[in-house]
Amino acid sequence: MDRNDGMNYAPKSSVERVVVEPGEFQFAAIGLDHGHIYAMSNGLTEAGAQLVAVYDPDPKKVQAFIEKYPQAKAASSEEEILDNPDIKLVASACIPNNRGPLGLRVLDHGKHYFSDKPGFTKKEQIEQARQKVAETGLKWGISYSERIHVEGAVFAGQLIEEGAIGRVVQVIGVGPHRISADQRPDWFFDPEYYGGILCDIGSHQIEQFLHFAGAKDAKVVHSKIANYHFKQYPKFQDFGDATLVADNGATFYFRVDWFTPDGLGTWGDGRVTILGTDGYIEVRKYIDIARNGNGDHVYLVNHEGEKHFEVAGKVGFPFFGDFILDCLNGTENAMTQEHTFKAAELCIDAQEKAVLIEGAELPVS
Image 1 (tube, one colour):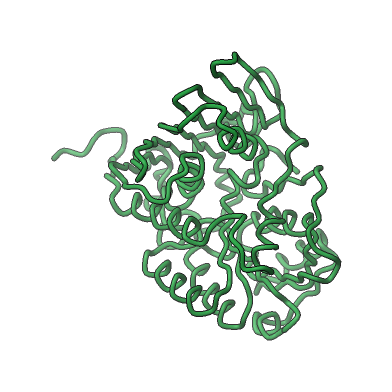
Image 2: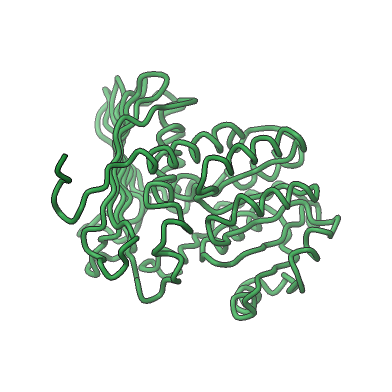
């Protein structure tokens, strides 16, 4: 895995947790437009799911995928996968504005669905998904990977559940990314396709806030977007931030951007700071700059003192096994369906309410 390549970031777990027998849970991939499909496939297969088929209209993408997962058979069409009764779940990282419509087709064919983030680009897509889930009883998952696929973030959640910092009252998140513009497809630069920066990479941030704060809902108080630097892509947004207040009183500020400098040893210095009534936690997800090139550093300060945990390779990614079992058993241990949809709804809300900052100056009212 290339630590400098965020769009193909696909961690592998060294903590074994297989939850199903071979062949018990077959899945397929449809839509390979984003490299996150590799991370999603890793997580599912490590938990025991069997990857049996793949479809994308681009044969080069399919060939690259099969080279990574030779057990997957190239399907001739989307319908070949959807009509296969043995396949229980479809995973997709197609172009974001197509993820909602694909999910509807997947559930209509009696299969569970697991989408890359953002799961949706319009609120009406979420309402359609809610209705379809209620109609079918099937699962609609979204891979909010900056929490579920980061051992430091998983461990922070475990500390909070154990009461290590008391009641969570504020979360601050930063999600900088390296743009690698010459490797991006045209749709990446048009918010009509990816939903805008707060909808896209902001979705990670809002989901982790709801999780860490133990909140069911939140209100977007203020949000901003801008294109400071990449003027050759006039519709693109390279900066965004927002402030939210949860239904339980916890507050949240986050910033996302595409300004990771080339000198950083990884694709983005993602961090989260969680303040509680009895202490605080900081997670340095991917690197501890100028000190340690590895990620998954967790710092805890509470009444007992100061602690530093290096948890890479020690925690694993329990979401994937839990999600498979949720699909099989109708439970909600990995992530509740309403949490999945609420995070998606709030990131679109933040995007729709955002003030556009023109250039480097505030707009004149």
